[in-house]
Length: 439
Image (cartoon, rainbow, N blue to C red; front, top):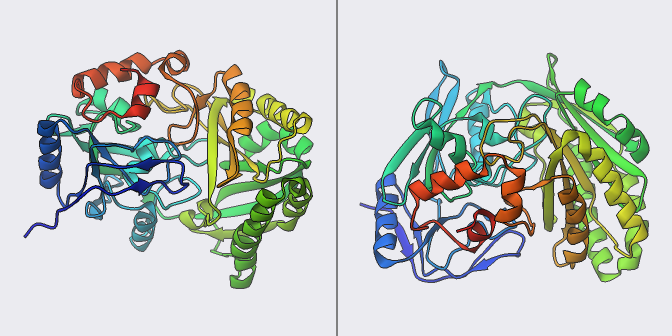
């Protein structure tokens, strides 16, 4: 008995409400065979195909007017290989479910982003990352992946098998095929000690290189309209778990970071003139704390306040100068910015269209509360980022096109040539891919 579900036209929206799509058909295949049949049928009918995750991308990377593939039934761990140190997981598995399942097995990913609502394939295909001195994005932890290509054939790739596909498909933007399974490197579960500490903007920017060098994972948030930042340092611990107390953790992670922040954002949207005063209060509300827990409980946090986001990866040596330019731009403008600016790092990697491909990188991410007009702010920030050769996050708002991106990615032509070979008729194309990859 098949569990595959085919649904008539419905409206699909992403998490932030920035993208709406009206596909001709929505399909939820329960196996690779059913996915293959759906891809072949769409091709025969002249319909384009896009797979969607949980909609956490802010761009239209997954939007289609053709066949929308939902991954709800392609979930679960296929295999854990403790000798090789890998886990093979179906593409539609949410990261939250993967992390909790690995923890039960005494295993963990080495690094991860700060939320875990995305699917494995959605997160890796768009280059989701956390922060790290030595460990990079989730996609760099991929050891093999499987996808269904435009002719309906399954294709497996790794460093040894179809290596030219592997180099690109780990962050494939949905342009090379529909990912069905991912094999990730894992390691025995370990403890991380998180040290969160308020710090002045001038100090943290002056000491940025030192903090990155001294910590396995360093990031900080700057609150616009203030000189205040909040820093977070995560390092492996040989001690015992000491998670935040139930009450203290709830106050910091739910009451202040979500509940009170939601109220402040709502008020700021209604009365923009109040934002600088609210920012001063918000930036002083979170006090210093230290706690120790297993990785996913330290790396990730609940994000209940909905927002829109743009993020750029810069050469690491350019990041602090660019951030100071953003600060100066906000201070001389009429902009009122209610969300903190986030700064993270990543080592260079070897993935064709990774934002850290071939260069050590730092990320500057800007956000605004959902429903707040964002174009003026994002356009001004983007002008600064592109002046430093910035690469936009593939899943976050930006206006760059293939002409620009081919200039900041040395291997851009390698990716588009592979796309021409695997999907010459652009079965997996859409308007977003046409803009960023060309046609």
